[in-house]
Length: 108
Image 1 (cartoon, one colour):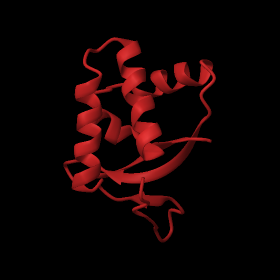
Image 2 (tube, helix red, strand yellow):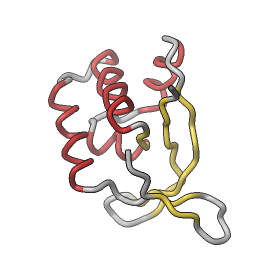
Image 3 (cartoon, helix red, strand yellow):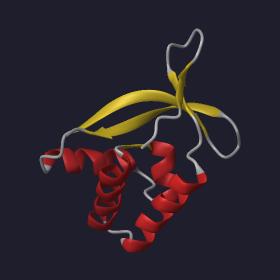
Image 4 (cartoon, rainbow, N blue to C red):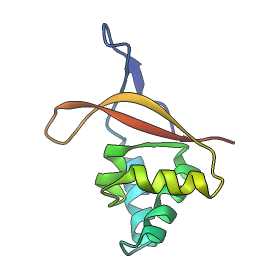
C-alpha cells in the first residue's frame, strides 16, 4: 500500500490519509470475494487486504471490509501464526473527526 501518512505537530502520531479511490475499490472487491459475516470470512478478508496492501487501519476494515470488530480477528490471525504488528495513527472517519486507531501491518 502506498504510504499516505504524515507526521503531525504535537501529538507525535502519524496521520493516515483517506485511501485513494483505487485502494478503496480494491478493498471493496476483497469484501465481495469473501462474503459472509463468520469470523473465518472476516479473517480471510483481512488477510487478503493485508497481503494486497501491506497495511490497513481499523476504520478501513470497518468501512470497506465490513469487519466491525477488527481487533479480535487480528488476534485470531496472530494465534494462527500470522506476523501482524500494530502501529498507532490518527485517521478521520467519514464525519471528519480524527481518531487514534490501529494500523495493522503484515510482516514478511
